[in-house]
Image 1: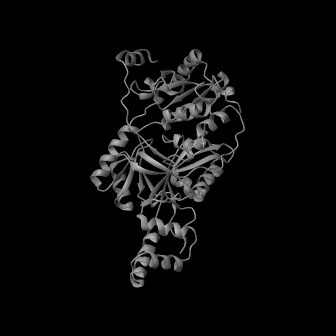
Image 2: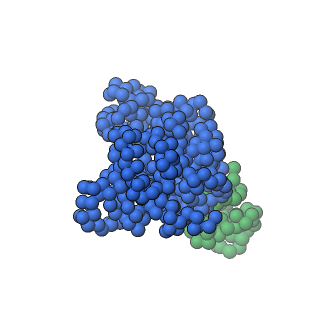
Image 3: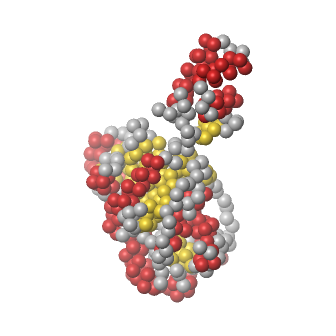
Length: 80
Length: 351
């Protein structure tokens, strides 16, 4: 899953889609994930980092990740 | 080009009605001053005594009242001849749809007097007219919502039978209402017919994201600039009170196709609705700059300056990229004037 290359993100979690004018405010976790995805970090590596850094089970992370991707798709932020 | 070349240029501008349904005049003036500096002389042309720009002398040196378009081209030419004798105009930029027909008609006489303009032809003006827009779209491969010309209440009922509700009722020149019932449709029809004359237009309602495009055509099939904006805050009249520049190659392509098939000359605005399938429906094409034109300057394209240079016969290199994410937020401001000022423009027609 790749974030569209033209999407502008900031360290504080603000997201702007310059093609549509849509903007979103994400929390610190969203900002971290977006930065990693924009930098081209593989999904598995991002998940590994989260498991190391946060107190979360692999099963919970998978469910949350799926939700996250659905949100990104709905917001039209992913490459098709 | 050295800025001095344009210093002292005298430019007359209409559309000083910077109110809740603003004309583009003040934004055009702001753009010109941003591009040419304060050395240019701006002459305001107004129809009503309470157009705010008349009283804003930081932007407008002096304003003259014009006869309404219904008084015809002779009255307009006579008045402009007088104004020219007082001010020695170099360029005129009309900014109202309803006055354009007359300005285009007298453009050759104005040019003989030494007053340049950069306007579409009558033919171009007619092509994008609301009454002809659907036909224009079908002929040239643009998505345009289906429409009905409304002359009587029976026509409103026929349109509702075809489009169902909601549908859009539009005035010949200005104003549009989304209506959800027959009562609303008839009320809007009667109001718009009384305000702007017939025909009133019923248009199929397209659900989607509204996008506006400001552009300027060189009259040879090319655009000098295209800038797209999405409205972020809309007034009850559907006017943008805040907006942000957006960038997508399909917007540029749409405007370039329009310029190519029409050879459009001058500024224009495309009102677009992008539906869920991603099709870009043209709702309207306004034959002049929009009131948010200063946003194009903020994004890196000064379209009014380009227009002035082309009016002066200069070759203008098309603008390239612009900045997405530039925001405008309109605001209200109580400008203070004296009753003597109001008296001056009301009684003598100039201030």
